[in-house]
Length: 148
Image (cartoon, rainbow, N blue to C red; front, side, top):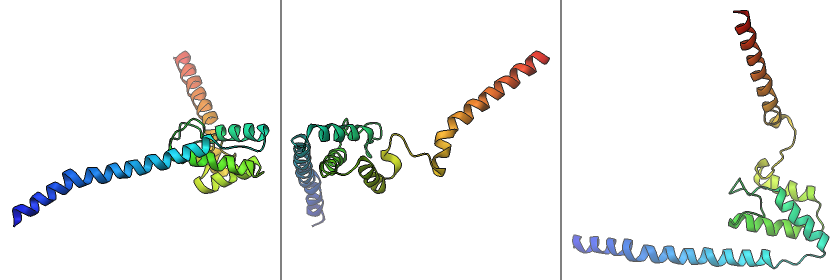
């Protein structure tokens, strides 16, 4: 009795698990293909609107990749967000409204140029402070070397 349950367990691991993983992968691929097709065949009201949407998508960072903008990334979330940007721009939303929507949903991570506000002062002023600190340390090192 115990041996048959072991065989059943091995059968489930070897046969059923790969089949369910394959079905899940096929479902993800089909949803990804549908999302990609809806983005690629999206029709804008005008060429100006299309250019504005594309430029806006190039200014926004992919929340999953973090090193690519929405236009360059092939991740499923980037495709969905690219479609959302297209839809919002096509509806007549301003760039500020689209950016506010995405930052409300994902935080400032989607911005390549974060806002200059109290919580980002270190980000904006940190490099300047470090340059001044290294300059001061270099000056002190040189003046001490000359004095000796």
